[in-house]
Length: 248
Length: 372
Ligand code: HEM
Ligand code: HEM
Ligand code: SF4
Ligand code: SF4
Image (cartoon, rainbow over all chains, first blue to last red; front, side, top):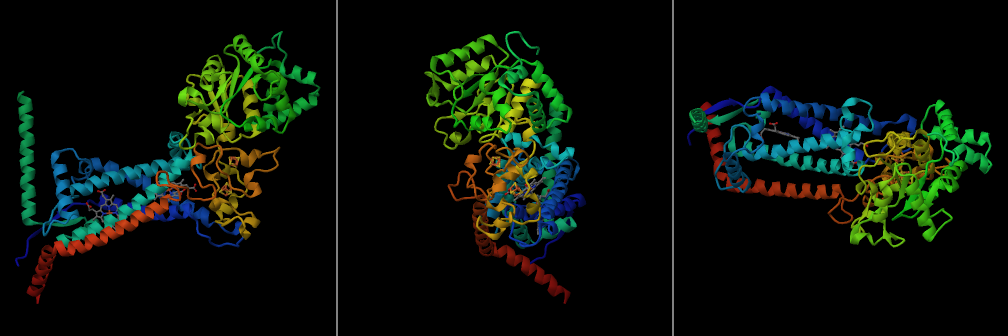
C-alpha cells in the first residue's frame, strides 16, 4: 500500500490552545467543586467548627475558577473575530447551505458509520462547530446563573452586573436548579467530546488529539489541493458577485 | 402632611388610648431599629407620628389563610397593632373590623370616596382568575373585581405575604383556581411586596410605619421587596453559618450532629436561597426562628417554594420528570446511556471502518520497514 504525502497545517493558534486547556481545567474544577456544593460529603465530622473551613474553601475555589472561566470565555468570543479562519465565529453558526450539507455528511459518515468512508475536515467539521455553538450557549447560561446567584454574596460591581438574573426567575430556586442541571450537560459533552477526538485520531491518523497541544494537523496532499481549489472557486464567485453588484 | 382638623394625629390617638409618652418613644425607637434606620431615625419617626394625621388603610382579604393578619397583630410592640391597625387606621378589614355585611361595604366605599389617591391598599391573599374569578367572592363580587375597584384610587399597594406576592400554595401546580399575585393584575401603582408565609410581624409594621412616617414607598429591590428587610438571605444571618463553612452538617434529624446544632443544609434548609429577615428579627418577639428550633428554612418567602420539594432534601425534584426524579438522577442516567452509546459506537467503528484503520496501520508499518 502506498504511503501518503501529508501537509502540515497550522490550525489552532496558541491563544486557542491556551484557551482550550484553561477552559477544560476550569470545567473539571467547577464540576467537582459544584457537585460538592450540591452534595457535601460527611467529612471531618466531630471537629470543632472553629478549626475547620473546608466547605468554605471549596466554595472559594468554585468562585475563583468561575472568574477564570468567565474571562477565558470572554476572550474566546473576542478571538472569534480576530483569530484565524479556524477560530472564526462563522465556524459555529450555520450561515449557508454548504454548512448544512457538511453537517449531514458528518452525521452519515461519522455518527451512523458509513462503511469505510471518511470525512476529512481541516479545522472543526461542521457538526462539531454547530455543537460548540450550544456549548458556548451553555457557558453563557452557567455564567449568568452562577454570577446571578453569586451577586448576593458579593459587594464587587462585576458580579453585581448580574444581579438582575434572579429577578427574571422570581428568585434563586430555579436558578440553582438550572445551574445544577447544566453541569450535567458539560459532563455528557466532555465524555462525547473526548471520545470523538480519539475516534478521529484513530480512523484518520492525522494527529487530531495532539493538534490541541501543538496546533497543527496533518492533511493529505489530495485533500489539501481539493480544499485549495474550492477556496479559489469561492473567491472567484465572490469577486464575480461584487463586480455584478457594482455594474447593477 | 399637617394635622387636619377632622382627623387626629397618630400621637393624639395614642394618648387618648392611654399610652404614655414614654411608651410612645419606646415604640418609635424599636420600630426605627427594625426599619434599619440610624439612631436619629427614632426622632424622625416620632416627629412624623406626632404631626401626621392617620393614613387611611383598606385591608383586603382574598385567597388566604389570615396568617399575615395574625402575624401582624402579634408583632412585639402592642402599639403596632393598636396604632396602625385596630381602631385607628383600618377603615376596612374583614377580620378585625367591628362592622360587617353591608355596613362594612359602606365603610369601605366611604374611605375610597373621601380619600381618593390617599389611602393605602393592603392586600392579603392571591386573586383567582379562572372562571371569571368565582373561586373567591365577597358580597357577591369577585376578588378580581374588588381589587381593580379598590386599587384604582390607592396611593400605594402593599402585597402582604407570599399569596399576594407570588401566589403561595394555592398557586401550586396545577393551580386549579388560577391564583394570581397582585403585581400581575394591577399596573401603574407602586406595589410593595412583603413576602413570607406569613411575613414577620415586625417587618410588616416596619413597612407600614415607613409608609406613614415618610409618606413614600421604602426602597425596593428588583423584585419589589423592601431592601431593609429582604436584601439578605436567611443563610447570611444564620447563627449556624459557621457550621456550614466548616462543612459540619446534620445528616438526619435524629443524629448526634442535630443535637450539636450543626447546619441543616443537607436536610433541606433553603436558607441559602431565601431572602428574609428571620435570622435577625426572628419570630415571636425575637424568641426564635425555625432554624434555631432545629428545622430547616422551607423558603416560605420565595416564589415557587411550594413546588420545589421535598422540603427535607437538599437536591429537589426536577420538574417534568415525575416525582422522585432530580437533576443528578436524570444526569446519571443520561451519562450512562451516553457511555453505552460510545461503547457501541467504538465497536461499530472497528467493524465498519476496518479498511481505513487497516490501511493506516499498514501504511505505518511500511514506513517502519523502510527504516530497518
Ligand atoms: C483530554 C481532554 C481533551 C482533549 C484531548 C481535547 C481535544 C480537543 C480538540 C482536538 C479540539 C479541536 C477539534 C475539533 O474541532 O473538534 C477541541 C476543541 C474544543 N474542546 Fe476539547 N479536548 C479535551 C477536553 C475538553 C473539555 C473537558 C472541554 C470542556 C467542556 C473541551 C471543550 C472544547 C471546546 C469548547 C472546543 C472548541 C474549541 C474552540 O473554541 O474552537 N475539551 N478539543
Ligand atoms: C462549568 C461551569 C460550572 C459548573 C459545572 C458549576 C456547577 C455548580 C453546581 C453543581 C452547583 C451546586 C448547585 C446546587 O445544587 O445548588 C453550583 C453552585 C454555585 N455555583 Fe457553579 N458551576 C459552574 C460555573 C459557575 C460560575 C461561572 C459561577 C459564577 C460565579 C458559579 C457560581 C455558583 C454559585 C454562586 C453557586 C451556589 C453556591 C452556594 O450557594 O454556596 N458557578 N455550581
Ligand atoms: S442552617 Fe440553613 S441558613 Fe443556616 S447556615 Fe445552614 S444552610 Fe444556611
Ligand atoms: S426561616 Fe425560611 S421558611 Fe422559616 S419563616 Fe423564615 S423564610 Fe420562612
